[in-house]
Image (tube, rainbow, N blue to C red; front, side, top):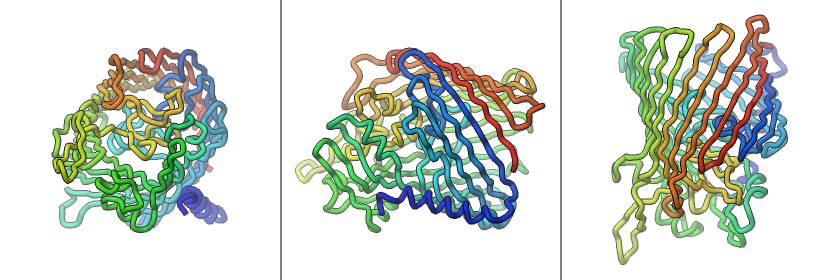
Length: 486
């Protein structure tokens, strides 16, 4: 069962999709896209590679073609359904054939069910200009899953429209067993048949019909569990029965079949994020949004046992209509603290507990918060795919970073996007860098969307990296895209 969960979810999504194909389908649209990238230096430049839902390659010269058909949920209807099938063939990628998306969605009133593999991003981050959400950035390939809950904000009764809620629960499975087997060097840790769980709840306070200001916030948690961890000749089989599925929903210690650390702490690799966002829209054409994301690896920083020094602070400004800048984003990332540099697990002799060295995105049994080598969280914490020695881990999670994003439409048919990131990297507490390593990453992207060719656009992207962490690279990418209705 644990080996086949990703296949089960994809087959279920495909079955639901095929069951609707025998009937006339309203709202069906398509997307076809091809891209080629040429680079020189160490790697494909950072912003030509990251935050692309894993459909990208670190190899310097690469390309892909993808095509998909979609039907979106009609949120105004009491009952509605949607689906998507999005496939790609690629050159110089981690795989040559990619099921990027294959899913089916159903909605009844405020309740929703999604089955399969679907691209998702963080709650409050601008997907084009942000560096990425701390928990889900859209940096890695989608994880096939069954996801149920309230997908969109729904007014809570008897609150006079001032309070809304949404949330979900999901279970799924990772699909990168083959990639890990090929990538991991002999004696290095890799995993197989790992299961996935996530859940979240968000509240919104405010009524835009009365006041141009509202506040959102919530808690989102995820876990890796089950499967097998392999390091050389050492194999750890993690249980994944019904009681273990419950244990990751209500985080608790493992039984005697798990390693001692899983018994004294919690079973599986648990990560999570508190987030808060305040939005002000005084006019129809402009507005201001400020947000904060606090990432945590365990209970010590989930609550207030330690000072919340770490996090991502962001500011997004939507400017009044003008020909130069439409949107500006600034983000500050700080992950150096991680509850401090000391960890001690309580023993009968010394019962005190010191919950430091959280080691963000890494884990002792699992290969960390990654999928197909790409970090699922913020990509400024450099993904394992960059490691040239076959080690699947995050080598620098103690980071101070600054990120800028600017977008605009200087001409009716021409838009641009400009990204720039600067980080200082200290490595990890257990393996610190000898010297602080700087990293500079830039992107300039121009998109031409001619009015005479409806649904067509071409994008020319220039990327450049500088610094000791990733080395120096520069490159260009050309993307051609056609969308339309069927």
